[in-house]
Length: 269
Image 1 (spheres, rainbow, N blue to C red):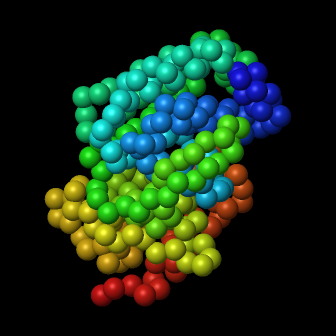
Image 2 (cartoon, rainbow, N blue to C red; image 1 turned 90 degrees about the horizontal axis):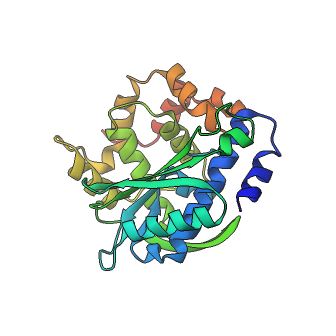
C-alpha cells in the first residue's frame, strides 16, 4: 500500500499537489483502519476533511477531526495501536503517538521516508505528520448520517449532516482566536451551495454556550460574523488557504466584499 501512495504522488509535478495527495492517501488509510476497528460506533467524522471526503469540498486538509458520541467501548488507544500495526504491515515507516490528558484526545501519525521518496525532502527521515483529534465533550444537538465512500479504500462513516457541519464551521469562524483562511473558504463554499444550506442552530447555540464567556445568539450568526470580519487580514487569509485549494483561481473570491455580500442577506438586527 505504500507503493500505491508513492504511485499516486508521483503522478503530479507540482510539489504542493504531491504533498496534498500523499497526505490525503494517509488520511484515507487512517480512516479505513478506524472503520475496521469499528471506531465509528463511537465517533462521528467532523470538520473540513469530512466536508472534502463526504461532500467533495475542493480543498485539501491536514487533520482528522471527530466527536465522541458514544462512550461505551470507547478505546482510542486500541484503535491507534491497530493503526500502527496496519501502517507497518503496509510498508510505512510510521510512529503513532497520543496525548490522553485533555478534553480533546490528540493523536499523531508521523510517517518517515515518504517525502524523501517522492522528491519533497532531501532528508530520508523528514516526517509527514497527520493529527487526529477527538472532542470527548462535544456540544449536543448534532444530526447524523452514515455514508459509504470509496476513497482508495471502501469506508463507512458516521458523520455530522451538512447542516451540523455548517454549524461547526460558523462556531469556528465566530469563536476561533486566530485567523484560519480555510474556515472562510469553507464558509464561502457553503454559501454557494444550491439548494441553500442552513446551519443547525441548536448545535451552534450549544457550541457557543460551551466555549464563550459571553455567548452570542445563534440566530444572530450573520451579524456576529460581519463584526468578526472587520478584523480579518485578507492577504493573510488568502496566504493561509492557498496551498490547499484545488482551484487556485478561487483565491480572488476571498475578499471582504464577497463575504459582506454573502452575509448581508437577511441579517438580524
